[in-house]
Length: 80
Image 1 (cartoon, rainbow, N blue to C red):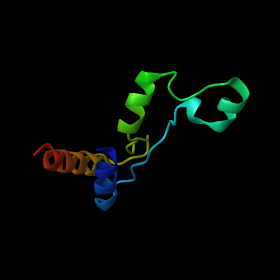
Image 2: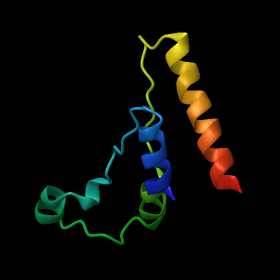
Image 3: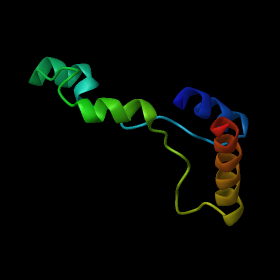
């Protein structure tokens, strides 16, 4: 479950976030283009499963390993 992993990563001091909300979920596109939930079932299946982990050019090797280690720890815990 994304929410459990999200919370666990935050508790490990990893700046995880949720980005890339499907366009057809935004009220602007619903009002102006008639887009509705249900039109892109694969996107709607995937969206609640996505997380954005830190990934940027100025990350130190230690920062990268912190993210990797936290993910491994959490995923092993939830794999049980």
